Length: 153
Image 1 (cartoon, helix red, strand yellow):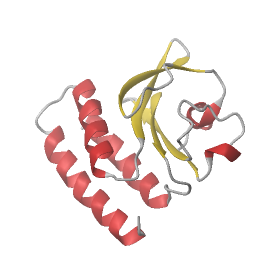
Image 2: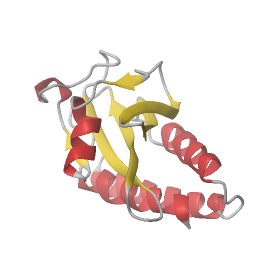
Image 3: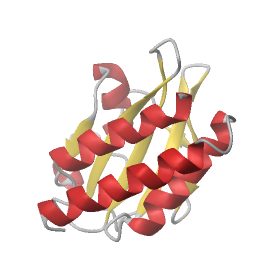
């Protein structure tokens, strides 16, 4: 997607999600709604979901798309890399990422954003995959980080 169009779409989605979040304070419901809106409004999203840290493991949570890996091998893949680095990661070609976990071989690029609680502690990640190479960039990173902040308003 062209950068200007992508930015404008995220801006519209942010406003839509902000209004939607004001209707319910439950964080589980907010997470589910964010995933659904993003997955169905961003045409290059193939898999969109959360992995949550439970007893030191990343377990699949709310998501949209094909069946996911239920448990991610500790210390491997993009999701664990984001948790360990405590920052968002954009991967233009997952096949070049050391230790990539292929839950679905059709995924070719990925972005992972740490999910934090109100105390600013990482409690999981937002993981988005695309069938296309080089789908994600700085615009996705900025807006997805901003959208995740809506969970706690």
